[in-house]
Length: 141
Image (cartoon, rainbow, N blue to C red; front, side, top):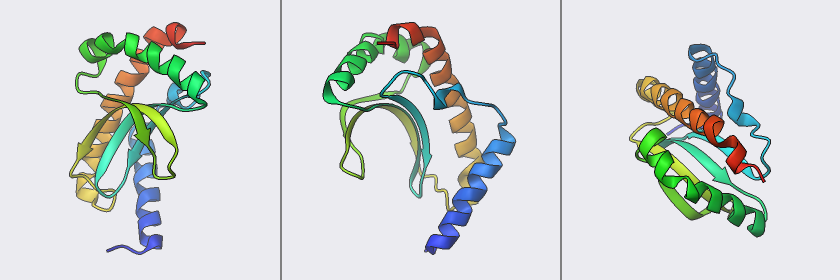
């Protein structure tokens, strides 16, 4: 078991190490499409790369429908194992739509899984970025 401080330190150490190992400026932080965000998350049980659709319901529906229209392309040409969740409830009880890939059995508290996670992030973020670059215009409002 890790204290909050130990956990915070390990998280910080991981993200610094990841940034040094993969010093690329990801375009995905600012998609310039309201309600569309790209995230990568690493906790004590899994790592996740996701396309999140947030915002008011009407906006979310429009973006989600655009992403669903690209589902076969996304699965065939980019993210073969992507999971589509039209309704995903975050820990803060906020409802979003999400497309994601994950690996289980890794932990930010276990440095032995960091390399595997870094490789997973790098590969999947590159795939999401390529997809977004190819279909950015379709996803715009």
